[in-house]
Every structure is written in structure tokens, then in C-alpha cells.
Image 1 (cartoon, rainbow, N blue to C red):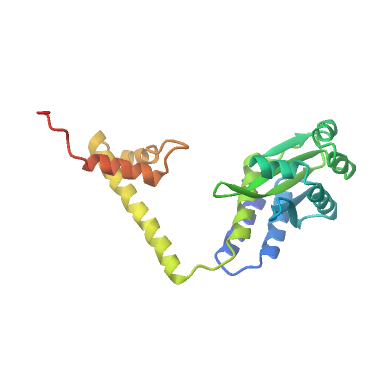
Image 2 (cartoon, helix red, strand yellow):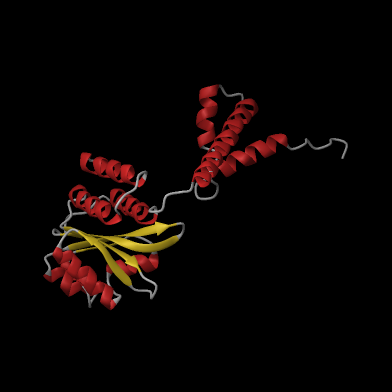
Length: 235
């Protein structure tokens, strides 16, 4: 990760745990993202109640005009990303014009040769897109880093209300409960597999099947399995 990206994430994280101005934090985040991703410009659009998009922040007038134009048409890479919930990317004037006949000419005329739109995802719902505009068709922004900026922007937008003290306690206790069951699962794995402490520590990280179980859920299954009564050999 670049120093620019690391500082950007640190500043955004610091703002989220305090009272903060959403507009100001997003403005700084997008400016940092433009540098970290070597982009010509970056814009941020969010979905509205009518199924369209609203411009929330932008690093340049050119990109702001493009974002507003495609928001009016409800067409273009950013709308495609919101509908699909996945990264949308196109490089080169020809492919951009062919893929988006309405918005593409504006993108190319503004001097941009590549576009990458990253979804703003929140608990399975796509609420907007981070729009990365590149001036060289050969440039490809780091997709992992681009999505990380989109995710941080999502947190900045949605984590604006402070939690009540009771809710803070509830979430802390929930986290501690999860930690307890994971430690119990580590002990079970060590006993069942004859592992030492370090080996059991690593084994607990592998008990969750990717895409199927969370670590806490997998740990609970391990603990429940150990607590289940053994089958009666007489039956």
C-alpha cells in the first residue's frame, strides 16, 4: 500500500471514531484517492429514492459535469456498477464509445481514456459508486485499492450517527462473546488434533469455509460438535 493510501485511510478512520463533517472527510478522501490511484479525476455518486443517482463529491469540475450528465441520463459506467454491484472497467476511446453511446462521447471529449467504477456496498446493497477517470488508456488503477477507497467512503457516508452508550456496550459484549467461542474452538482443535498452542491458533483461522461460514459461526460448530453426546455403541 502506498504512503498516500495509508495516510488517507488513517485520516478517514480517525474521523469516523469522532464527530466529523461528511462533506469535508469525503473531499479529502477523494483527493487522496486520486493521488494513490494515479487518476485524472474521481467522483462519488449515490443512489436516490427514484432509482437515479446524485453527485456527492468530486475532485474536478470536469468529472463533476460528467457525473451529473450520466446521473441525468441514468446511463454510463457508474449506473452499471450500481445495478450490478460489481466493478465496471473500460479502457480506450473505442470501447468506451461502443459500450456507452450516450455518455461515452462526453467522457472522451473531457480527455479521459479509461474509466473504473467501484460499487459502494453496504450489507448486500449497492448504494452508489466511486468513479475513477484515467487520462491514459494504458493506466490501470489497483482494483483492490480502488475498492478499499470505495468501502471507506461508504463507511464515512453511513457512520454519521453516534451510538448510544447502551448500544456501544451491546456491540462490545457481542465482540467479546465471539472472541470467547473462538478461543474455545481453539482448545477443542488442539485436543482433537493433538496440536500445540501455536498450531491450534493457526488452525482456528482455517475452520471457516470461504464464502460459507463466518469465523464465529464455524467456531460455534466446532464447540457444539465437541459437546455433543457420543453415539451409543449398543444401538
